[in-house]
Image (cartoon, rainbow, N blue to C red; front, side, top):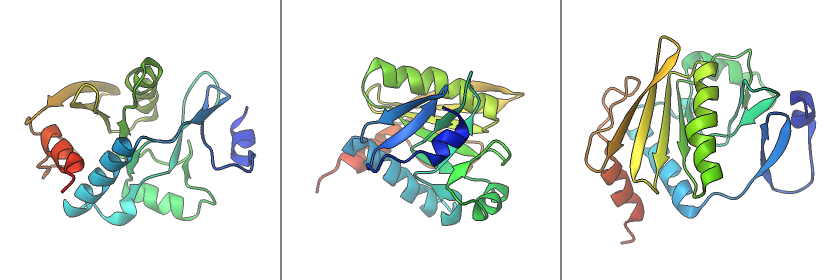
Length: 188
């Protein structure tokens, strides 16, 4: 399937899809935990001063692959230039002719296929796309892995439990994996 075919595809269902190397891949509904993690981070980033118009959930991004590939990250922080570029777009899709996002967050779902997609394939695609920072929030391994783009390659740092997550983009960040999980899992 080409990008044009993907953009024009309609099947009259509420299914979400990614385009992976020219193949339409149905994305199962997110787990409640994954949705809560993405929602918590959205709210936390707003509290930390990231303008609401620079945060996105549900925005697609075209990346490089052997064939046409479109990813649907859990959360994105846009640059100011990208906010402007998306204003004139007819679809909430970051195309190759637009600047890359500043930060992309993926929350890992259970299963080897999902882990490989986030840790291997998306990592290389986001790196090639020039995304400055890529976070993998892994509730299974109980860690946040932050990839920072340095001279075209990602440098990786993993944060567990009460280790403060360091981010060159979000300098005033006061967040740990433990704080995130505690707030999300609290039921009172």
